Length: 257
Ligand SMILES: Cc1cc2nc3c(=O)[nH]c(=O)nc-3n(C[C@H](O)[C@H](O)[C@H](O)COP(=O)(O)O)c2cc1C
Image (cartoon, rainbow, N blue to C red; front, side, top):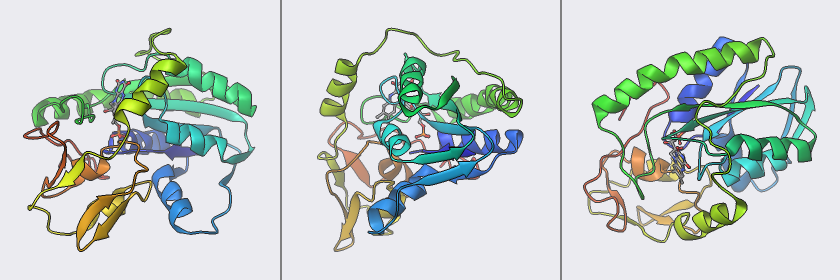
């Protein structure tokens, strides 16, 4: 069973290839998280599969995103106890593998390895996204490593990370990162907004409310970049950090915005 979380489409793209090649069911953690936050009596997540669980997500500060870790902690997994992790990243995954392995140990899941692939950078509140053409090149180059991880998963073999570097991050750096960068106070909307509501619909944490047609962020943001990157009018900004910057967003069909 392939479970993915994705802000701007890279991990959804990787997950759809993984599920197709490995022949596994595909489920969106974004949808499940949203459902849990918007439907008051949604029970604890429960999954049952006789195939390994494959968690696919972006890299946030050299680890799996906290919302994904929380999702895994909040879930009950029955059937197979094997867990694979597949991360998309802009440049590297640090020691995400060591961290994911520790999580599995704690939850009594059998860690089968973490693999990753470089895909277009989406963290535009801090860095810049690549040009359209460079991103196209990265998307083409990503297919082979995703498929080769999928074949190993289908065979039940361990996978390894090519983009990792152990010792890169500790809990203190991760905590500092979330404290300094992972917030929504600086999100604003310009006059270009046409009140289409896409930002509200896409937020996996149901953190955006439309008030008088305009988005308002409610303080529970994981900086996934879905709202700012997918906005068809490019009407969302993050202070002055994103002004004049290109937005990168990959549709479910694998097309760049
Ligand atoms: C909050 C945040 C933190 C990130 N941290 C890292 C990182 O530590 N290393 C890295 O290589 N890329 C990092 N990135 C880039 C994303 O991991 C990368 O672009 C990923 O493919 C986006 O996946 P998605 O489109 O499925 O959301 C970060 C992006 C965001 C938004």
